[in-house]
Length: 427
Ligand SMILES: *Cc1c(COP(=O)(O)O)cnc(C)c1O
Image 1 (cartoon, rainbow, N blue to C red):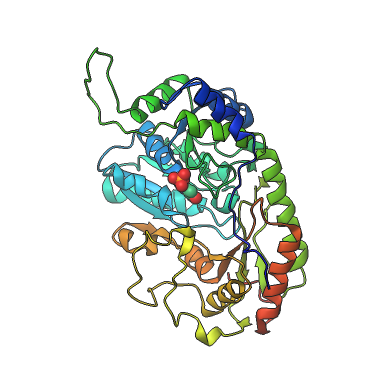
Image 2 (tube, protein in one colour):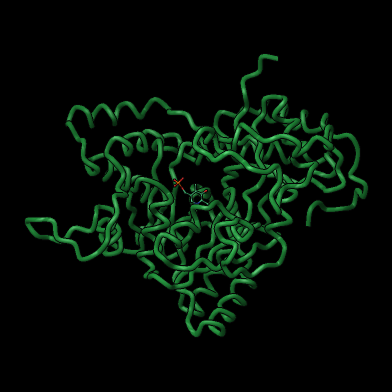
């Protein structure tokens, strides 16, 4: 079959980008500042709809997490509470600062930071270390908003700043408000697989003009105002270039279209999975949640048997996750001590044979070798989700016919089960 490969979420340029890039060429704007950067920041601010917030365009979402933590006052030796069920970029910048990540597990409803466990972890860290954690980093994973009302209430009660990781949640809303504007700082990403792209970039949503100025200061090598280079702080080269911002401006013209498309595919998945026993689609858990459905995700019942399940994990994966083939290390073992169930890996392989990209859910940070020694407050939810879950194609290049083909391929891959039809899935 000569079907093009169906990818999770690869973005495409709309065509409007060239106009803004051409202007940059015409004006010879080669510096990481300029009219496109300012205009892109204004457009982001308008979209976010909160006049109290200010936006700084940066080289990546990871840089935004880093500068958000600095803005929140995180210093070397501090502890930072971060959602364990996330991509590594939510946690790694804590390490960059010489601070210590403390991981908090998820709740089954949103799959994001469990507020009860968050409060327990704060009380326990104060008891164990005599000090309050310096910041809280909740994540809107796969675009699903975290339970921000409960998380912000706890953050307020203990007076701890929130750095809201909305890298996957640009265009999601919680309680009618745009994700990224709910915490003291908010993080956006414009990587090539998020909601819009600048061919690599991100933004920090700041609480004031002063905070924006400080983030800009640190993003341009922390220069003091002298006629020569004089440094009283260690800075970073994190500003977005005027060319990238031109691409971002072109992408802003298709942002609403992208959000609507992701939601349309989510509704179609919901319809098609309704009569698919053993497969549970992750959906908005209540009226205050309005996910952008950046990636549609499902859980496979552990008793669902998938074709060639006995062949799962028998050979080293060469097409590595995230399209990073060539820059990853070679796996030295077929297994790690925490991996998705064999039926999930068999389903991934069945989709792969049909030229469909799928991917296990993100492996929780507290199970990663780099964070083996970090304290973690756990309830089993994130590991259970990781063992049972799969991300499915969801991006603007995925058509409704593609979604039908994906679900059809999954249906054909089922050998038997689930054994107990009343089982609600993984949890
Ligand atoms: C992508 C991502 C980031 C980092 O964004 P980059 O632009 O890729 O640096 C941070 N947090 C989460 C949850 C992400 O998915």
